[in-house]
Length: 129
Image (cartoon, rainbow, N blue to C red):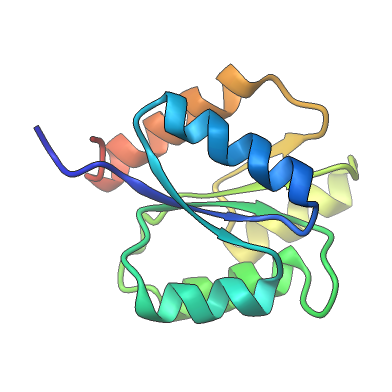
């Protein structure tokens, strides 16, 4: 049995952050919480992170910029990054994929869908628990 995956939740809405944290814990994943893109980059630089749930719209630094910076910092090209956004639209999705996102979920989302996608991406990266 492998290590429990550590997923960083990057979400400025405290209620959504807590909901995602609870969701991960019920699926045997540990989480670290960040409330901004800048905080996410700081945490990523010092912690082992196996995957990221990243909100698109945040103050200071949006999810796109945070995604780009994390991709540049990461030595794992298969690090799962799932963007979560309330903004739907082809342009937003294209920008996200160009920034390095692996997948997108539009709020409101089905919790099981995020878990299934995250597990699939973790398996591909070799980090499944």
